[in-house]
Image (tube, rainbow, N blue to C red; front, side, top):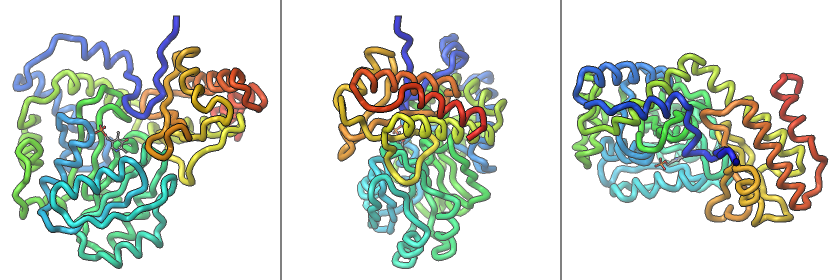
Length: 380
Ligand SMILES: *Cc1c(COP(=O)(O)O)cnc(C)c1O
């Protein structure tokens, strides 16, 4: 027997309570029972996003939430800045292009986050931008960007530019306070920190963004957020939602509410610290300069570079994932986003040690688990 253990940053593992709830008979999305359920979910989503604004649930993968925001808020020819520091960040520049926007693509070397000084320069050069996109946790490189600090700089230089945040792997992992930090668009997806299967996207707009939306004719029918907001006030959606996923969302959010959003953030901080310390204790080198709390990226071992990921799967049922583009066959990515605890980190570190020993990597066996335990015990 091999127990499947998924350590990928989306899809992420699904709690048993969520799977069981989704297996129950489906209900109709205009029925009172479903409307009541959506009402409960909507309140929890606002708590999770730290906002009083509607958090709209769309039936799409996370990318759909960004597309909805762009189609609802911007016109062709408007300037959009894209802070491009990875594979996902790159997508938002491409998307603004599709919608005919004038894109200023700011390339930041992979594995790095933009600094406050760089951000100030970008905004000074483009104070007329209608929006700026930033990825809070860049999943391709495991890079965290300090959104609170960046938002402050952006507002200072260009108060009207809409601050749009890809929170797809930060919501539920990193502190993200939409209202307090004055963010205009925040998006996430279901298969990441929310612990349910892929298929739902979530998006909230600020008061400032809604004002902007009022002056724009949405360039999508399905993704018109003005329609979504109207339906939101009736605990509904304009179109048929992915009913089973919405049903599964309730116990997932209930788990997060019971733990408390701040404690969910703290757990992710702890797990990521433990995993990083453990990997370093195996003499593997961490990738990047600003680690995300959702996913940890490390260089593959010199010996058995091509076998390492396969070996983890065949011998332990452990699925980690390789790098993308230039990082293919260079790094591996281990997730701690969503339904994970300390024991999961010890299991993945123990499995990694085993694979490294088999591949002849030089390190002192047992050290990684010990290093993580010290962090989990609070003595390091
Ligand atoms: C997964 C991910 C996306 C894309 O989401 P899809 O659900 O695949 O559309 C975008 N941004 C980040 C940071 C992600 O991790």
